Image (cartoon, rainbow, N blue to C red; front, side, top):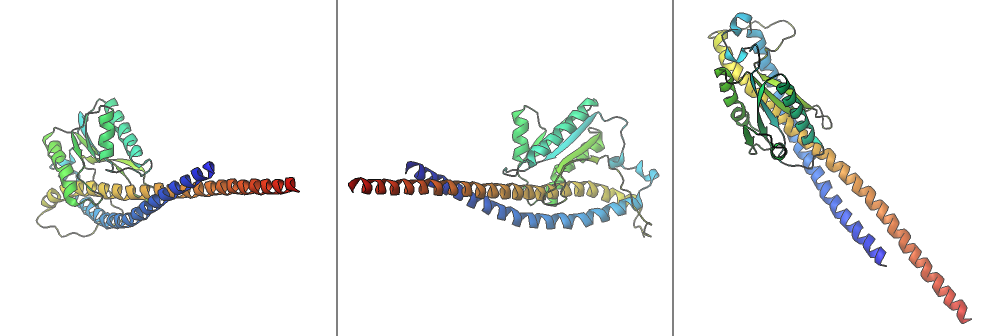
Length: 286
C-alpha cells in the first residue's frame, strides 16, 4: 500500500503541474494574438516609410545626411540585444544570446570596439554571469512595447553616430515569421542602407523639399526599425512560451497516463494477492 500511496501522490503532483502549464499555454496564446496584431500593424507603416525614402534618395543627397554616412572602417560599434524579462519559453533567449555572441565575435575579429546594450533580464543575467560589461541595461520595456521605448533605446546612439563616436549600430532580435518560427536575427540600423523599391516610382509632390523631408524621415525610419524589432521579439517570446508550455502539458499528460497504469497494475496485483490468501486460508480450514 505504501507504493500505491506514493504513486497517487505523484499522480496528484503531475496533475497540478499540468494545470499550471495548461493555464500558461492559454495565457501565452492570448498574448501572442495581441502581439501578432501589433506586428501586423507595424509592418505596413515600415514598408510605406521605406518606399518614401527609396523614392527620395539620390547619391547627391546622401552626402548631406549624417545617418547615411558610410565609414571606411567601423572603429566603434554598438549592439542592441533584445531578450525577455521572463523565462519558461524554451530556447528563445538562449538563441538570441548565441546570435549576439556571434555578432560580437565577428565585429571584434574585424578590429571593431563594441559596446553592448541589453534589454531584458535574461540577457542581462547571462552577460553579468560571463563578466561581459554592458553599456546600458533595460528591464522596463514590457511585452507591449511602445514607440517611446524605441526612441529611448536608439536616440542616444543616433546622436553618437552623427557625432562620429560610433560607426555602426546593430540590433539582435527575434524575427517573427509564425508562432513556431522566430529565428534570431541581426540587422544593421546605422548607417542607414536606403531601401530598394520595386516597380515604378510614384509621382511625388515634394514640399518643402526632398532634403527637408529626409531630415525628418531618416530618424523616424531608424526608430521604426527598433520598434518593429521590439514588437516582433515580444510576439516571438509569446509564441515560444506557448510552444514550451504545450510540450510541458503533453509530457505531463503522458506521465500521468504512465503513472495511472502503474498504479492500476499495482492495485490489481494487491487485490489478486489478497484473493489468493483468502482462498488459501479457506482451503486450509477444510
